[in-house]
Amino acid sequence: MIATLAPALAQQQQVRTADRINANTLTVISGNVNGTYLSIAYDLSAVLDDGDNLRILPVIGKGGGQNVVDVRYLKGIDLGITQAPLLEQLRRAGGLGDIHEKIAYIAKLFNEEMHLVVRSDITSIEQLQGKKVNFSDVGSGTQLSTRNIFALLGLKVEEVNLGQADAFEAMKRGEVAATVLIAGKPAGAMAKLKLTDGFRLLPVPYAKALQQSYLPSEFAAEEYPGLIEPGQKVPSIAVSAILVAYNWPKDTDRYQRIAKFINAFFPRVQAGDFSKAPRHPKWREINLTAVVPGWNRFPAAEDWLQRTRAQASSGRENFQKFLETRQKPSDATAMSAAERTRLFEEFEKWNQLRATNR
Image: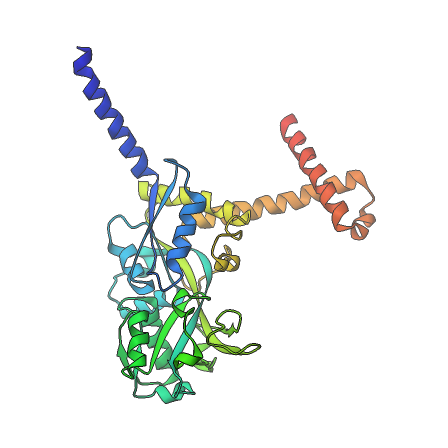
């Protein structure tokens, strides 16, 4: 009898283990090795993985445009990284159904800069008119955003779609005039390029037509020493990278899984854990409270932000009450930073004592 039960118990244990792992694992679709998304997704895993309690599984994707499609339709994909303006572009295109209701953003992550690399004989963006320009991989955020940017600038070029390494070789052979990569600086794909090899990082003007959807930016010599002379800067534009999710109903397991991720992710951002080495430098730009105009934030993320605001407001009020028990109110303005830190530590102990005695 015991021998009969043993395999059955072992099988039940395996089923429970499989259920636990699947219930607490989220996938985040990122990008390829040329951009920043894959590093960001890896950092999510490195910081947040907690055994079987929470696991983040990075997935290599095509990039921002395809990532929205995959979050919308691909089974097993929970989260995706994309560019904020692409949501509106895809909504207007109409191919993804009611995308406004189906896709919700969680947070703005960082800015992605437009790298426009040309052959050395090209000195202005206007000279690209009618020439072959690489818009990167089909379905990537670079492809879709570059189409929009060039259209807004009134530039008509012949689009080709190559990986960055293939594009550089095509430029050397004179087959392609330029290549575009929209990614967080410094981008690894650009790191080995040199002026002496016939490449140039071309300025992108912050034209009025771009100002509604894009941000001004620039590259410094320290970021791309092979492409920029010491002490010089190259102006460009940038776009906001955001984390999105399928907008699951609140009573579903998938919603609860994403809510669990948010309740682990946001506090670690707040604590600065993503801003420390060896995490990607772009994490220093994350803004949890930034709004994506016209789009809905995932409800669990909005709930977390509202709770945090309420706690902060309550904390400030309680700290002021605590100060009044220690000194005259007029003394607060003269307090040094060190004194305020010391008093805040006392306040936390005082607040804990009040909570215990309630």
